Image (cartoon, rainbow, N blue to C red; front, side):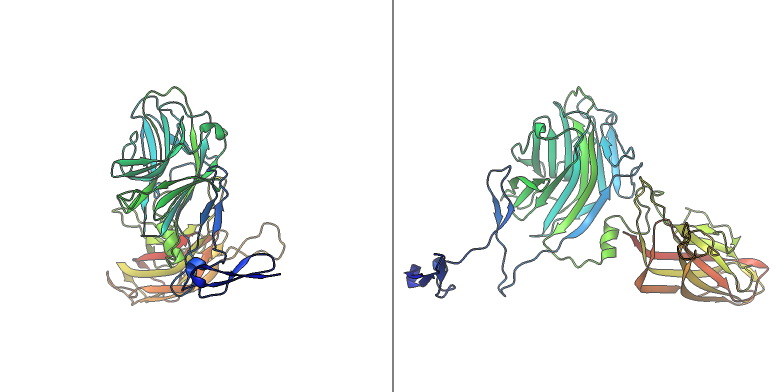
Length: 483
């Protein structure tokens, strides 16, 4: 059975058989009289805060619900044995940090005992705030050997930290002390803090917990293991949680006075995401911003550049062979003696994508393009020299003669896959400075993928005449990233 009611402003409301009111008038003309369900989503049931955390969606003037697309702008996992010096800066005063290879970055390997003792790791990359777009700052971390004691502090967040034993003057971070966990917002020296979000007694020693600071346009949410611990409103006087529009990510352990124990804080990984905005960044660009450009080594790799370019040193020209690399690097600079037998393939540059171990994360090397250029560096005797260049990739041994195993053969090996780049030519007796080309460029819409443990090489095939003396200097660059 249904009944009719009169809503506000004379609007007509009917109730269904189960008693749910349904508005039948003009909702836009009398919105206060609408008896419809208003939509909210429960982000958190209020397990810690005591109050369910509800958020309403936004609708555009063209009736579309607002949908955010997240973009990872930084990520790292501390499973290596050494600091990734491309990504992280480090400073220490008595107290030290190390990576023992057990999957964590450990602060307090040598414990600080007095005020100003401390250590920090800080990214060289800065992560930005963009208007109403949010920023999600995530860590897995925890106390390891003992509970924090008086004067012992651990910080994790974004900030312009510069002194090992001193907190940043600008930034946003989680602060762990013997008194519990709080959130700290520091706007150019002016500090706003949450209350104690949780006590140390709620955290088991040895466990790693997932913490997240989510920056919105009016507040910062603090989460642990997907449970809301609380909110920290952004003061109306500052509008932003920190003055600088972009900040490095940092981790810091420090002493504010005399410390009596030898506690270690561990961090497993860090992830920073730009949220609620579709940046439309190319994935390779996003990976490069996060320190995963192919030009730099990754965790567990040889740190620094992957290209072969020794400062202030000209390469010594060597003869190319089919089985060994003349030069080792992901491109760079090389010098070759053009004595390769006709129709033979020689390895100019070779690089092995490091094979994974427990301390080296296996990553695909994604190559979107290659450029090669050569020039005569010692006058040629004889010729002409004609080189056909190609990218060889996927082989499981440096040699281009590596065979492909038969189906279901034990210990599968790969022969090199070949992608041609182009030709360079040098006239007979070409003088120093003569270019073989204006630069050969291979641009790919379908990338070359070099998997962990596999090789990639720049190969030159001699289709001209063997010379007796002379040298050609070759440069090569890979447009690539790690994922």
